[in-house]
Each structure stands twice: as structure tokens, then as C-alpha cells.
Image 1 (tube, helix red, strand yellow):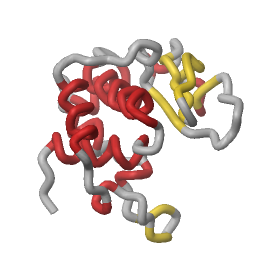
Image 2 (spheres, one colour):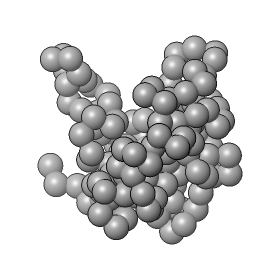
Image 3 (tube, helix red, strand yellow):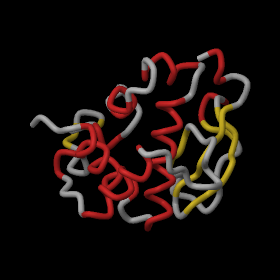
Image 4 (cartoon, helix red, strand yellow):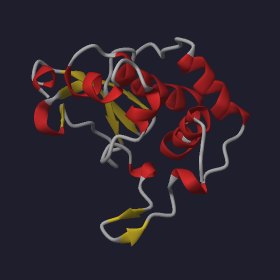
Length: 147
């Protein structure tokens, strides 16, 4: 199934943060755009000058981009999503420069399934910055520059 970047982004927002409300979805969209626009480190190399699709499709980054996890079918993937207008609105907002305050410099997020966010993103490339809903958001540490 060939999807435009906008469609893929909307599906990813719905899949990764659809249950987190508007701010939660905007926070995830902000992280994706931060990755696409950062000028150093791993994400700068992956985006090759700001290609959002390359960030979304980077292997191993988003569980929702995988149709299987550990050899088991993953029903919560972008290909099973049917975005609503809100998902497209958030994508358009993010791609036109919108960033959610509080995660405006974050490069990483995840749901720890815990009331507490770990202080560092795994491998110490990120340090906790904020929590929105069930997701913890991390800004890069000095170690990120060497990725």
C-alpha cells in the first residue's frame, strides 16, 4: 500500500498517541519534526536535510511501523489505522512549523507503563524533560551528538 508522507504521518500519530488526546498527539508529532530538523547526530544523518518520511521509516524507531514484533503479528500498526481529520490537522500543524511547548526540543518518547519516567532514555542519549499523558519525553544529552 503506497501512502503519501502526510497519510503515513497521520497514521503514525493515531497509532502511537491516538489515546493521548490532542496534546499527546501534538507532542509525538513534535518529536518527529524535531528529529527531521535537528542538524547533528543520528537523526540529521537519517533525515538527510529534513525528510520526514525517512525519520518515520527509520528501522527500529516506532513499534507502530512494524507489522510484527518478536515474530508475532502486531495488529497495532500504521497499516491498520484509519486516521480522522484531527490526525491530519496535527500533521499539517507540525509540518508547517507547529511545536508543542514542553517537548519542543525532545527527540525521544516512550510509554514506560509506569507512573514514573526513568531519568534517562535508554542508552543515556536523552534525559527526561516532560511527561504528557502516558508518554515520557526526553531531550538529547551530550551523548546524542556522538550517535
